[in-house]
Length: 240
Ligand SMILES: [Mg+2]
Image (cartoon, rainbow, N blue to C red; front, side, top):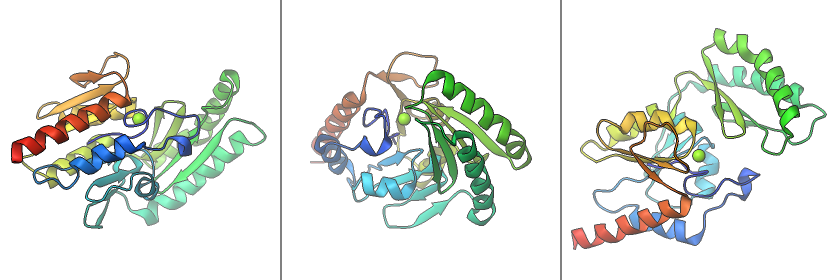
């Protein structure tokens, strides 16, 4: 199981520029569908956009931090009730749009089960002001409706309280009992996933050293790709 942005591909200024190279797709296709292997991407991105970005048959794609999991056979598992959550998130998105109105460098993304306010291209002072306004505008609403506010890398996200990567990972593990779970991730939001695997598998932090629940570390996305290639090759040898 692996995060996408910052883990399989370097973080880019705009998410649409963070595309997988042929080496990554080749490594994933090499592993996907092998008997005894389950491969999953667990991302903050929407499941539908993951399907387009990672066109690898036979893998799980957990979008919006696991709010929605697309299984290899096409079945979709949902962790939230869309009818209840959609009007709330529309309200949050509207308030976010008001906060960024007339300012450059911000982007409001209305995902299927979350609203993300990106500020990667904004100046520091302006980002601080917009974030303070946004938090003031949504804090009460979030408390009343059990929405969580989660800070990631140059993004703040509002999503249902029941949704996090740890829950997504537990669900994926339950679909493959007996498998040894590995999870790769780079961001604070990946810590829930590291905690979900730490007593039965291995969490691997991608990036610089920090306080983490992961027990291993790789330096950058290309190291993860290399790892996948090596495991894929080893696996072939094991089964033949
Ligand atoms: Mg990431």
